[in-house]
Each structure stands twice: as C-alpha cells, then as structure tokens.
Length: 617
Image 1 (spheres, rainbow, N blue to C red):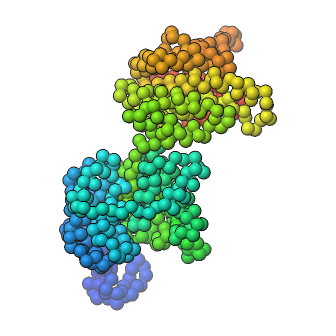
Image 2 (image 1 turned 60 degrees about the horizontal axis):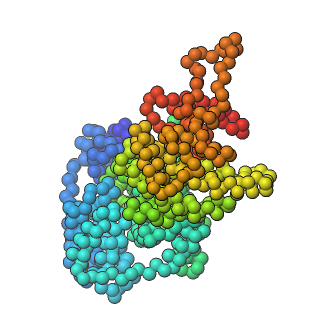
Image 3 (image 1 turned 60 degrees about the vertical axis):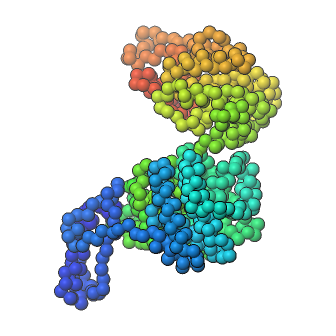
C-alpha cells in the first residue's frame, strides 16, 4: 500500500541501521542526525503479496531481509488451547468440530466473495464461545459451541446455503437442541421504532437485526452486504434506536451514536489526510477526524455511548487496504502523518456495501459478515394476490397522505391483480437494454404513480383553496385506476425495447380484459404506449394532441441552422412529458437507449425550454 519510491527510501534507511549494528556502534548518523543505537532493535515485514492495491517490494529492500514462508497453522490445536483457557472441559473434541465445520463448508457451500473459512473465522467462533462460557458457566458445552458457530456464521450465508450449513452442524452436533434466545425487550423496542418510522418489522428483518447485534458483540469490524432495497440502512438504524431505547428503560445496554460517510465520494487524501505539496503541512481527512472523534468520546467527554463509524459506499482495494490495521487485532488507524489512533472498546467500524467482488481476501477475513437479500421485502411470486402486503408496498400505501389515503384499498386491489404478473413477464420474457434489479422495478412503478397522484395535492406553500380541494376529492375515484395503469405501463414497459413493448401491450390488454378493468376507457386501438391520460379532462388522448401546434418562424426572422431544427414527434412529446412528470415529482431519471435516438436532444430541450418558470434554464 506504500508507494514504490517511498519503499526504496525506506530500504536505504534500514540499510544504514543494519550497517551500524554490524559495526557494533553505540551512536550512528541517520539522515543527518546522530542517534543512539539499541542492539535489540529489529524490523520485520509481514505480507501476503499478490492482492490488488499492494506494491511489490523493490529489490534493494528485498535483499535486506531473509524470507520465511509461513505454513498453515494447526487450527484444532490453537482452538483447543483457546477453549481450555476459557474454561471448556471438552476442548479437544469441540475444537475439532470447529475445524471440521469450516472444512465441510468450504467443500459443500457455494463460492461467494464474502465467505471466509480461515484462521480469523475460527478465532471469531472461539471468542464467541469464550463469551458464552463466562455468561453461562453451567450450560452444556456442546450447546454453547453450537450457538457460537451459528451466531458467527449463519448471518453471512445466502438463503440456499443455509439448509446445507444447518445439515453440517446437525451432523456434527447430533441431538443438541438450542434454547431460544430471549430478545423480548429488543423486539419490543424495534417494533416501537418501526411503528414511528412507518417500517414493517417482518420476521426476516428481526432475525437480521439480532444477527447484527450478536455480530457487534464478537467483532469490532463488520460488513452489511446486499443489494439495494434489502433494508441494510433501516436494519442498523432500527438496532441503534432500539438499543438507545433499551438504555432509557434501564436495560444493561448503551445508547448508540452513528457517524456515516461515503468513502468513494472523496479522494484518498480527503478521506485519510494528506500533506500539502507546497507547504508540506498535514491536513486531516474526513475519516481520520470522524474516527478520532468516535474513539475519544469517552476519554475527552465522558460519553460511554456505543460509537458506530459507518462507511456507506463501494469497497475497493485502493482505500480499504489502509483500514487493515483497524480491522485486525491491532485496532489502530495509522495515518501518513505518523499519528496512530487506537479504537475504543465501545467503537465499531461498519461497512455497508453491495458486494465484495473487488475486495481482497485480507479485508474479507478481518470482518464479520451479515448478508441481506432483498426478496423478502418484495411480493412473493407464489402469492401474487397478496402483493400489497409485501413490506415495500405496504409501507408506501400507509404513507399516502389525505385525500389519497381514502383510496388505499382500491390501489391495493390493483397492485394485487397486476404487479406480480407484469414483473414476472419482465423477468422471464422481456428484454431490457440495461437490466434493472427487481426491487428497482417495483420502486419505478411507485415513483411514476407518486408523480401523477401527488401532483393533484395542494401546494403546502400556497393559500388553502377549499373549492379546488373539493374538486380533487370528487375527481379521485375516476383517476386512481387509469393513473395506476399509466404507472404500470411506464414503470415496467418503459424499461424494455420495442419488440418487448409489443409483447407487454398484448399481455396487459389480455389481463385487463380477463379481470374486467377498463382503465377509465383506454381505447382498444394502437399500443398502450401510444396513449396519454389527461387528468384534467379525465380521458385518454394520443400524445400528438398534448403538444401545442408547431409554428415555423418566417424566413426573414429565421437565423438558426437547418440541423438545429427540432420537429416534435409523438415519441419526443411522450418522452418529454414523462421527463417533465418525473422532474416535477423530484425523481432522479435515467434516459437509456441506443445511439441516435435523441436522448440528449430530448433532455437538453426540456432543460432549456420545458422547465417550469421557477427554475433558471
């Protein structure tokens, strides 16, 4: 991780020290200064070369050291010694079971970037086993060991690996029944936070919260891994709020303070700190300041709260390698300025990442892993008629403001009937130029639906208009169904290419005919993508009729080049209107398509001419 030029200079400095030792000097010249020499001083390099982000040692440094190849240690013997020191009487058979568990896991389970079965994984189990032995000295040691293995390893496995892992542990610990952990107060405080934040505390989410809690006890560095819309952020926030509430109720817990930053949004120098190239003055980075503040809370301010430093962003070998000394047993952040900041006992370093495809094995082995899969938040493919009860959609429906909240049941009925069949068609038969994850598809439908429905609500900054509000309330029953179908057409059909849109068009029309939905009188001619729903007139019109007449300027006044003329077509009017709807609803928008389909022209035309008056073009 150190630059080659710096390593070369370090080699010269080490050579100076070694020559002074060979000459048995008591003092020697080092970089222009006279220093006393201790004959016991020595220098060691521990390294595992070949990872991305690591420099190869220069030759002038290599020749100063003798290479010693390390062998794989005897995990069973180390485990036996550690268990004996924790008070286990059956240390030898239990240590062998730990080693055998990891051996079988590496052979039978799928290969994932965040799986690790090395010495650090064994040490985490031993640490957890020691904690349980101290808490329950009279308990059966097989029960304690099985609980330790499950607590440390179960959180990181994908759903299809969990049954295999449980099969391995049941073979190694036959007949051992685990008592249920008492998390009544934790569940109660989690439920309280979820109710106030309008979240759904599903059984799967609570299991992941308890796994995170157990992992925090045995590891000081951990990673929450999983795709977007998996509730990673909601999970740690819920746990933090629950622990804080438990302390307020008198439980033996500490409140939690979270310090969140995105490591990839800034440069390495801004993250860790850097020397000014001109003045050579050191300036601290964001992570250094955050980490130091968290580590010194108790020492300087007498605050004994848990301090969680959360790094929410992609992990790569460039910046994460500098965290290795924090994540291993050293627990120290070493800065280029020479400052070393130790981690306090109450501190935890938590990474929130999508995957670890570019992280080195050194980083993966140092962290506890909690893997979260998004599907449990989404509607089940096996129960499409219960789609509105899925956490993501249920939360959205509960958040509807008045007067839209009166139409929750109608929206829920439409969601149950159409959302899962359409998303399954998208997954199995339609072609997407850029494949969207399934959680993003559901979010896409809800975003478009929000933009149309929320545009009917009165502006909070404007004067109340009772007449207008009454008019909207009377119109809503006629608008909910057609607007839902507009969101479904573009939330799903907007992601696919033209041949797939034709398939989607025939599928959705057949489905509507089967279920008897008329979508406010959607005309049978043309494609569903050819029609726009006019909410003021409560009718479907073609896109051409929504645009004002195009007037060409007289030739005498015309100064533009021919190739700058933009003639509106049905397609350009359609996309400009959709862009306007999404932008008016404050939604981020990605415009995709092959080269030459007027993506840039459509966006630039909207930004220069189509923006509302309150924005500067």
